[in-house]
Image 1 (tube, rainbow, N blue to C red):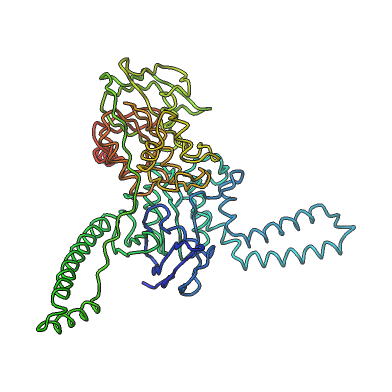
Image 2 (tube, one colour):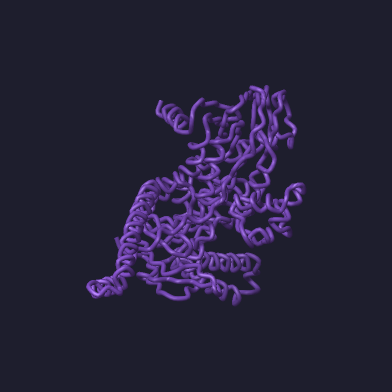
Length: 545
């Protein structure tokens, strides 16, 4: 396995701020590697250095054979007004330029009066031959073949190729964007949170597709199932430093815990020994009989290779829901609901009852109506047919919309937002509350426009849980959250005594919080009275039959 690219002792400073400190990473061909760490740890900075958007302050980058590097960003770029075929072909920019020139020449020849402009025609014929030769030399005819070959690998039919990209969901658009990159035949593929906003079906496809590639892949992701499935090496980044773990995410979690435990024990033992030696030196430094021994020990103590104290875990948000008001047994009752969007039927005569204490995850492909269902329950959308009734006894809802973080007032400061929402709270209570969500010291005075995506997500969640509720409706609450934040949210939901209706494509998260699964399929609801693993067992057994 040859090395595609290597970062050696890379450091990056932004003024006096250390973003990366002596980072060393090697990426090998055929290897899937993950950069893991909290938001702001330095993962994206490493991506930018790899693709040349940022220069390192010190250290060297070694590239074997000038590898071609491709980067699929979180917000991938697709022309919605192009057909799928046109968008895929747009990855061949040099060929496209020649193709446009050929078309121009052909159009000019069509409008030419041959009898009157024979000399001009000869010029056009020569130009046409020149550009046709160039088109062939660049692989223009092979381009068309390559596009035809990749279409079924991406899940598109030949008929789909001529449909507009804008007619497909976000998950299918991501497939087009990925296809454009793969057609360029990169040696190294960089993926930044590739499973964000993808439905489970598309995530399964992506896992299988990436597994089939023979190139080097580096992923930034907080999707723990995804990392377990694909990654064979984890680079853990923490406050600009990095550690390498040769294994998947589960191995990383286990090994990191063991390493921290071992380091802590070794550090404590050494500190005890150092303290004993210091006491001996202090006691016998002036002794007539033992002063030489004391001096010898002092010299040895100065030469000792000291074990570093374990790095304290960085402060992460702690999600604590207010005490849950008691409710009646019946929380929600949906009767004979039918609803459509444009010409698509989302729900056809569906029924659903939710009882107190149930924690339900809603699964289904993008566009099946998951978010619409939550909006209907919250009376943001009126259903076409059917009844949606909350329980009669003290049902208090709290709703987190998928794009809630993006709807925050950008010109407002963090602390002012919370103060304005709860003017009766003291300054101390506001600061304590925000501290639980990772906003401490000067960060509470940041303007919201200055916050990262993860910080905005935490602030939006903070706003949602300020007031007590007993029925939570959450639409993709883990988007943009780092792993520690996800784990804290999982723990908070586990301890939450109310009822939960959640939409999420984070399989690990679902497996931790849900005790019932609702699948939306073919405009119907299918209920599975068990956790995510039970749902997989049942649905996979049906597929085998």
